Length: 146
Image (tube, rainbow, N blue to C red):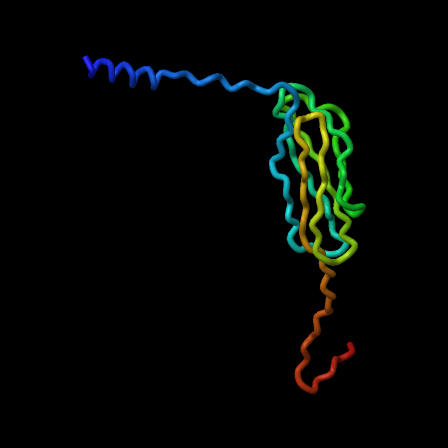
């Protein structure tokens, strides 16, 4: 009798059903990555990178004007609504005309329930001076005019 009661008690505990996960309504913005490291790049090189994102929600996603941490970082974003399941990109361009390390951010505002901060970092260095190759002559030899 006690054994039957113990078995039924164990079965009752294992059969508890979990409440279904309630899916949120509205747009959701999901980025593939939120940090891009340029590493070391040269002065005057292309400082652009595209951050890819998807609207993982169930309503259209609308981006408002992103805010960059300084005037040297310029974001370009889609102005049209991004439908559920669609993927798009935000292009961030860093001005590489000044040498030195950088660590900048762009804050993304939208009608989704979260604010996303994208970051770029790296180091801008001057291009090395190009030297012309020297032709080796035999010791004491001089070029011959033809």
